[in-house]
Length: 192
Image (cartoon, rainbow, N blue to C red):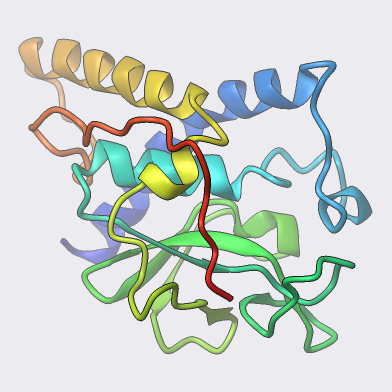
């Protein structure tokens, strides 16, 4: 897929997600991450990377790999130099997608970047933490923390099917197949 086509697809997907991010953040039970609370809360993508990356994984039928790292800007006992490299050289906990060797990040604006970043996996801003010697190969390990995303993926799939049936274009990243089925995991094993 050409970068311009991918960017257009990601712009359309981000438009779909904007009201869902707002709904999630407007929930009275919403808690900002320790680092997210220090960012501009008016930026719609703050703390939405986990949900967004799982969503991209699901709607692409697994073609978008989930990558990320915990970071070292919070007081987490799992701090590491992985995630998104911020201006002071530290790493913020962050998740992003990888498709065909390219980082795709539609929540980069929370770090002062453009809303959509497409770059090489070797870009120094993105340093994934490898779990068990591999990148995440499915969303099951993360989905238990955000079951709403499975519904977002189903809603998106239905909208895209209706558009296709009307002869309208659909985002290139969208798989014609049903999204990956993910079940909630009882625990999340993190080998750090």
